[in-house]
Image (cartoon, rainbow, N blue to C red; front, side, top):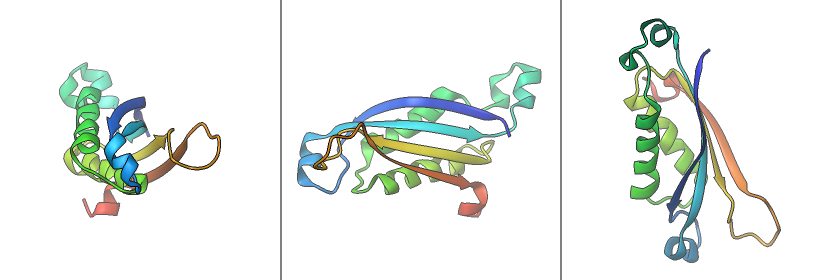
Length: 124
């Protein structure tokens, strides 16, 4: 299936289990693969026949910055569900959330979760 791909969307937010994460905040990175049929847009050259990536980015930003999550698993789930519910052309989605400043006692580039969801996961 065709995809709209967004890589390294970054937002500063206050998610995490620890109180320091809630008060200090940190940057979160998102990689999204939105699966949909891009043939109509490819033939028409009309943005009404696709899902605009600026609209995708804005919806993710709203979820990340206006809600608070303890777990990045819950954050990823909220993003996947919102995009599938509100963008009916998207048939499936892969959401990866990276947390490079996770408070763990190790040197690590980042911690991440990745989920894959389809419309049927939410009875859409």
